[in-house]
Amino acid sequence: MTEFPLVLGLNTFGDVSFDDNGQPVSHAQAIRDVVAQGVLADDVGVDFIGIGEHHTPDMPLSAADVVLSAIAARTSRVHVGSAVTVLSSDDPVRVFQRFSTLNAVSDGRAEVILGRGSSVDSFPLFGYDLADYEQLFEEKTHLFAELVKGGPITWNGTTRPALKDQDVVPYTEPFPTWIGVGGSPQSVVRAAHYGFSLMLAIIGGHPARFRPYAQLFHQALEKFDAAPLPIGVHSPGHVAETDEEAREEFWPHYLEVITRVGRSRGFAVPTTESYAHEFGPHGALYVGSPETVAQKIAANLKMLSANRFDLKYGIGGLSHKALMTTIELYGTQVVPRVRELMAE
Amino acid sequence: MTRLAVLGAGHVGPVIARVALDAGCPVSIANSGDPADIALITEVLIPGAEARWAADAVADADLVVLSIPLHRFATFDPDLVTGKLVIDTMNYWPPTDGVVDMFEDPLRGSSEIVADRLAGATVVKSLNHIGYHEIDEDRRPPGAPDRRALGVAGDDPTAVDLVASLIDRVGYDPIRLGSLAAGRVLQPGGPVFGVRLAAPKFTEIVQ
Image (cartoon, rainbow over all chains, first blue to last red):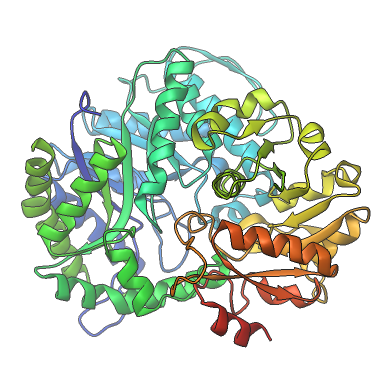
């Protein structure tokens, strides 16, 4: 929507990068690499850097807010946030405290994107049953909405002990809260109900199929007499100097990761055809030269009446160096080009 | 024209409702509670469909589409669909949805277990092995060279024919499988799950 500023950000799931010999770096190094990537994002004019919580050996960013704090301490402009925080398996009070603290450290640059999380490693880790995810997410979102209002909190539910007139500190300025939605219409309505912004996670298929969800969000806000709120898009991609380079560099890792992850999540094994479909105009991947990626971002933001785009960069097997190149090209070329195209 | 009741207003239900409406079928949609809860979703995502109580939606339907979360199936009332033809679009997918004890039977398919519990209904398995995000986009008119095939499995040949004709009208080549047991090939991890295939290749794989 035109009333909100255009925001162009980056997200990472903190995939362990590989060194020049094709070997995975240590978890400690992978975490330091993400800090360096966040600092570069700030340098090159990216608006937001988000870290998606994961709990697996190939994605060890389980405590994203600590990493975000390090990025915040070394930057001055870029907003720092989650993408997403798996609220269902966390304590909303702790999430609120951590991001309030991050908001203080970063001088008001914190944001949180809440999600059920499409990867589910955190459920067994923290003793939750996947069969309860709807109720967990619903109740905890409600509690989080109460926390965001500020002041002593009173809350009752089944997924966490009750709270009565409880102070929750630190008190800081409010920070933006988003709900990440992958395709559940109820989640869209829930975001509007609690007054949270909508982040559409478009990770496969034609982005146009999300247009009705954007419309649903606007109509739900109207129904709840709420003020308009921004809509963002999160999609995966990779930027290199040329289309060919980006596509060749990304493909073997995309094939390996989707094949492996697909075994547990039911994705089909990618083929060169399905890959071409996804990076083409009707797919969800933003893989190409800065111009190609910028054109696709601008077209889809317009089509969805969205004002924010977060490119989820990085995939297991790519080197830190390749990711730094993606970030640099994104900040120095894609971002200004999208701004130009959106102003047309 | 075949009248549909879609049970479930999550990721999958509204998409199936919309393509069925496009194919000319009157569609009602219900979740487990008050239709008022899904009125807005229905109005915006499925214009032309009617949000109703599940029992009302099923009562005058020729076909019931069961698209609820599988872990809720244990509390689904089998009497609700007695005498009805039910399309089971659900999947058992423990890594994503958790372990559901009643589906932990390595020798049987999830739709066979569904059919056991819905003993008064006729169950056909279909639309489970195409991504909900592809159902809209991949539709093609009959004879299109890139028309995608979808499996339709069931023990009752008349029911399978009826569902196959709906699949065809929606925009896919139906491939009939003569039993729910044969429909195990359509399950997650199987050779056609989530894969775009034209009819000849699909047939070759599942037979």
